[in-house]
Image 1: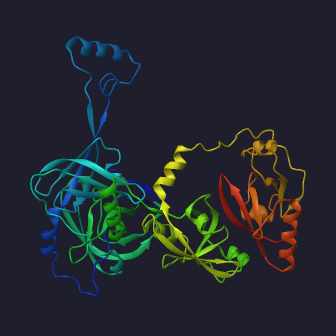
Image 2: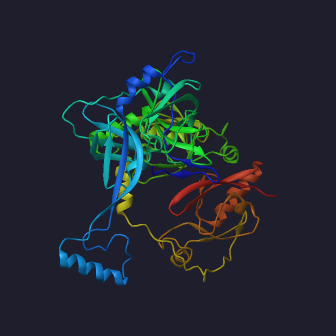
Image 3: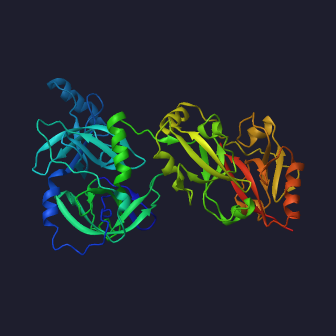
Length: 486
């Protein structure tokens, strides 16, 4: 089956995994999983996909374009009638499960993403061609539909929020194309981030998962689906007891939206955020590194309309405490579009509350896709070297149309541009780059080099060890903590 590879030397191969059970109290190992497997297996399906290569007038299967064989074979087909045949190539083999009697089937997006034809194979061997209802690449979930004249066996989603590390789980799928197979294990960990998408929150399991299991269900001991098996960590492509499943509470929300709209509709706050390092926490006077730091606010977006500002630290969203940056995108995405959400921030050491009416993320992304991004210039050979003040190792100059073009920026940009850096300087060590546009120093807007120097001097007088510099790079703003020298 098609699978993705994550990681460096060891592969994170996308496949099904198991998720934690729905148990309120610890239970001993069952004597047998036979009754549960017999009950659940009829709702688990195998999925095969095909793609079509070549076609009428588009060349010949297996024959490179532009060769002498082109003319020979085309003359043959013209003489004896018929078009160049269309060749079907197998793409992948995976798993899925039926979620209602009408024939809706859940699987992984990576199982079907390149398919021209999708076939769902029921437990009794019946093959049904499926239509694609919708996909969500960000969570690797797809929803299919098969048409039948009778009701199909199906399974229900369980509550993935209550599964605990150590709970028993059962994985059913189609490993290596052998057909329905059952494996058992426990939940090994929760809330795993494997860097596969913006909403990573995987359940980790040691239930054996192999090629072909992708898209299959992970059941608790009550028979509820608590996860969709999606990836494994493996040096060989086979199970080594580290698998990951998308939690059912996330999957069920995506499935409901795909069924209703054919796509997802996620909440959108309209901020760009970054993690808070200890250095940034100190520079901002924060008690710790919890929360999500607002690096920039989207113009005319929901957050700007509600009054949020760059430099705010979001510590709570709609009643959910934000202890680290990655928790905020998930909390926002899970909130209904058009709903007012309470956002609590720390600004200048004080806690403030804002009510933000969320927009729709997909609508915003479509607007971005339809717009034209100003290209970055690659013609940097004749960049002029800055001959201006040096602030913490940053050589900065006021923006002019000519300078902005030389640095690959919008000619209309205003402010201070970093044109060069002293090797080994505090600014270079902090990650500042030539071409960055300096927006703020010490949380104050700076319109001149003199203003920058004043903020640095004031920070030194306060005996601060670092100062926060807010820069814009490739259209995105971010805060960087620059160490103060002598």
